[in-house]
Length: 102
Image 1 (cartoon, one colour):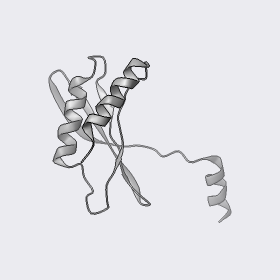
Image 2: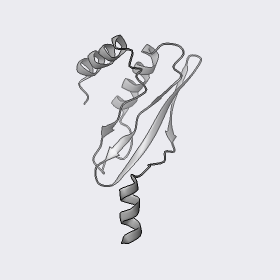
Image 3: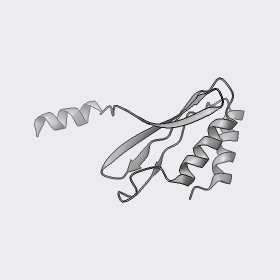
């Protein structure tokens, strides 16, 4: 369960420093491959609280050592939907070179 009080304070601090919040990632164990109901409720509450010009926020799930699954929360008027989001993971040049040499 996220420490929402702490996270809300961080978002507020960022806002005061003019750092624009665009989402947050968190980890899940492999046996929980989807957002939980609590995750979804928190994501919706975050997007509702954002300024009206922010219509999308991103919430990738990290499965350590395995994969990343990304979600996008989209606001369309008063309706908020959470959808799977395709992402590309860009590797560092060194990693690409190492893979070619294997």
